Length: 423
Image (cartoon, rainbow, N blue to C red; front, side, top):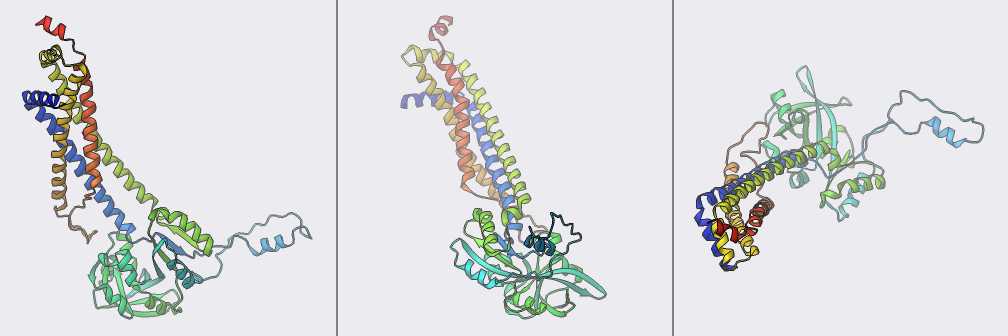
């Protein structure tokens, strides 16, 4: 093997320029593969984070809806087989039952979830539909009463505050954090007070302690945040009144099954993060597929370059191949020589390509990227996951081996007698 490697290196030096061109092709392909995948998946993580960072893995709530069985249906079922003939009831313009959108036994549910080993964090929420009174204009809004400490710890609430301190919201009374769009429409700033009117007609003054910007403009024109105690006071509800319970799980993939389980167990409505963001995840998957497809095509193109160079080298080195066979080298030895030559090109191109890919990722990661829609983003996003490097170099070596196999097979079949007779 040492002798075969020496011969392969000699042939490589004899055609050094063509060999360098082939290695550069592999290097360029791997560089672009690593940089492209790192950038596209970093972008996916950024876009997913806009939704997933603020979305619980499982959300428990009580959706008001019409009763599936109307009183006349219940009465009929109780008297089936007695005085009622077979009948079908047509009940039109059915209204939702008169009930509050609260979760019954919310505190007991939270205690049960805190004991569940699958659950990482439990955070209650109270959502209130309100109007913000700005002069003679009423702006529609939604105040989310939150456990601020839990939101900071598990939902990265502080990352989306462009102004203010989240702890002021946790410790202050009658305080609120406004969405960026809503704050702009009201021309409200830190320290100012805003007037809020609830659906029941009650009014309250809340002091602005922060500005929140999620990056989704329509969301920021409506959503606001307050301490959950403040919202309970605003709605004149007791301390056990909650409309939502948000769960963060240790295993995100278990969310769909757990949502179905909890819905049946506690007789509540439940939605998992995969169902709530199915379209968003589809877009991320499509972008990832496109990235991998482009990278693979680049590596295949580099493989064709190696194939052509080795083919030309065989035609130019027929004399050397004939001499090798005439002096005792077998066809399999010749095949190994050209395969070694191909793998050397692939290995050199692969290593330099990985270095080039990391360098390009670093350059992209330091390019300024500032936009008003994404206040927490200062540079282009990059994912430095090592799996992209492993995939790139593995596929590059596989491509170069396949590209070298066919010319090497052809070289192994050369008849030295015909070559020498022709000379």
